[in-house]
Image 1: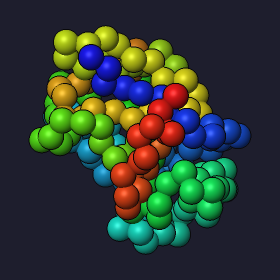
Image 2: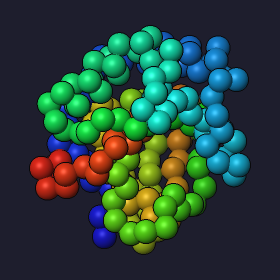
Image 3: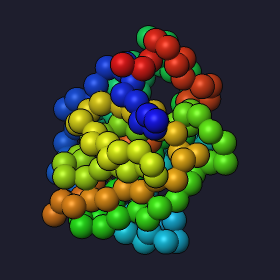
Length: 170
């Protein structure tokens, strides 16, 4: 079974990882815990319910990329967009995000994911490539492990409408 598919979206390039890590370290109190069972996994909303955070403009590469995706029709308007950070040498334990089968309409873009992976029950480990985006079957039990000494940073995008499967999947 394939639970993770690379999407045919233009890569997100030019991200200043040091700036993101600096933002996380200084503004850690602004980041929300994602799950009670994973206290080392936090996120910061850049767009929430289509409303823009004042911090969004401080990440021009993400602004430009997200605007281009919408302008070129890859995705509809963005409902939610958040930075996700998993601390070094930590994991997100086995869990299910939604109670239906099929690919989640949200997708993940790898910003800094060296030496980390997502693993699905009865499937394999998937390793993300920097700047590329992935659709996931989050109704299947899965976990994320960061074996690196660095933060694992991804961007999660939730468009208002479902991704068009065929033209999007690589």
